[in-house]
Image (cartoon, rainbow, N blue to C red):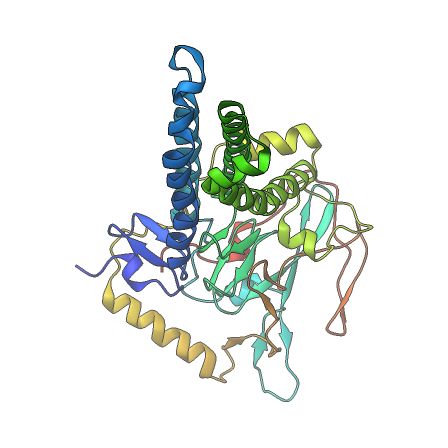
Length: 376
C-alpha cells in the first residue's frame, strides 16, 4: 500500500491531521492573526467588560461579556475554516490533453513536432471567454480559474491569496473568508463602543473630566486606538467584498479592470449574486487527500512528464515557449481568462480564431478538454 495523496502533493500546501486540514504554505500567518485577535480580546475581557457588570440593573452587564465572547468565537471559527479548507484546488493531470482532442499547430523547423494552442475559447452566458493552458497542472483552466504562484495550484474562482489567513481564497472558502472579515469588523466596532461606555461610566462615578477618565483607564484607550485602526482594514475589506459579491466579481478580476467597458458574463443581478455566495451549496472538493496513491504509478507519471518535456519525437505534444506571466501573490497571476465581445474574432500569437457561437445561455465548458481530473 502506497502513501496517501497529501504526502505526494506537488503543491506547496501543508496538511494536518492526516490530510483532513489543507493549509497554505505560509500557515504560520494564521497563528499571528490569531494572536492579533485573541490578545486584545483578553485585555478587553479583563480590563473593561468585567468592570461593567455592575453598571447595568439586574446584572445585565454580563451580556456585554457574553456578546464579546460570541463575536470572538465567530471570528476564530471563520478564520480557521478559511485557512484550513480546500479553496477549490483543481487536480493536476497526469498527462497533457490528448492530441486528437485539440486543434494542432505544427511548428516550422521542427519536423513533425506539434504543440497545443495556449488558449481555448468557451462560452459563458453568450459571451466568449478565453482560457489558458497551465503548464504546471497540464490542463486548460476553467473560466475564472487561476494558478496561484504562492500555493502552486490552480484554484477555481480564484479571488486572491490572503497572507493573513495563509491560504488562497477561492470557490470553496470565499464564504468563510467574507464571514471572517465581517465578523471581525463587528468585533472591532463592539470593542470600541464598549470602551467608550466604560470611559463614560468612569466620568459619572468619579465626577471627573474625560481626560481624567481616560488617564484612569489606559487599557480602554489602547483598545479604542487598536480597534479604530483595525476597523479601517477589515471594515474596508467587508464593504469592498460586498461590492464584489453584488456585481459577481473576484478581487483579481476587479484589480485587473477585466470588466471595464465590457459585459460581465457572470453577473446575474444583485439578488442572484448574493444568493450564489451565501445560500448555494459549497461544491465538494475535487481532491481526496487521504486516498492512497501507488508509489510505482506515481514514479511512472514523473518519468512520463520528463519524457514529455524532453522528447522531440513526432508524437510529442509540447507547448510553445513563453515567458512566465508575472504572478500577483495577493491576487493570483495574470494567466486568467479573458473576455471577448460576443461573436468577434481575436488575434493571438499572429493567428486568427474563428467566431464563437454564443447562442447558449449556459456555460459551455467541456470537462473533457480539461484533461483527466483524476487523482494523480
